[in-house]
Length: 161
Image (cartoon, rainbow, N blue to C red; front, side):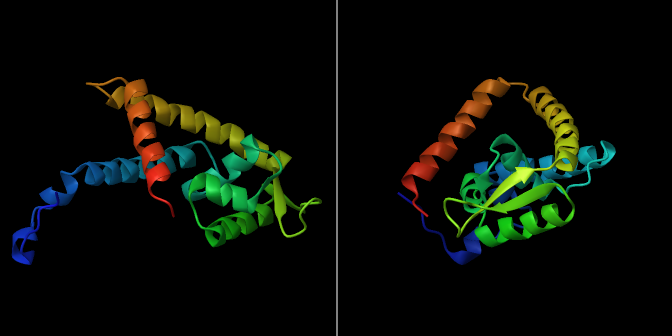
């Protein structure tokens, strides 16, 4: 049962209630991963912003995927994916084509220029994975990954958007 509090009881000048929680720690890990990843991508000469990676990597792993399928796959709204696709297409990293079976949809393929970026991204991703593994001192990286996957799968199954 949820415990109710008076608003004054919720004040937390040291942010321990939020940052000490599971969600606070997940947010912190995500923010650190984002900063570290951005730095590493820059060092590797990647010309794609870290927030655009899920789109190009999904298009690379699943050639011919639609923008809507990418939005569903990476849990982002279609307009956000559309903006990223327009940028990546203009930069020459993606080719957008009309879906011949469903003319309402576009299909995406990574260009030769995009594949060169994907190679650098993959090197950076493997380095980031290694840093995360090294940061896991009390539990194995695989067990932690499986636990987080279970949580996300259960949330997705039980919380219909």
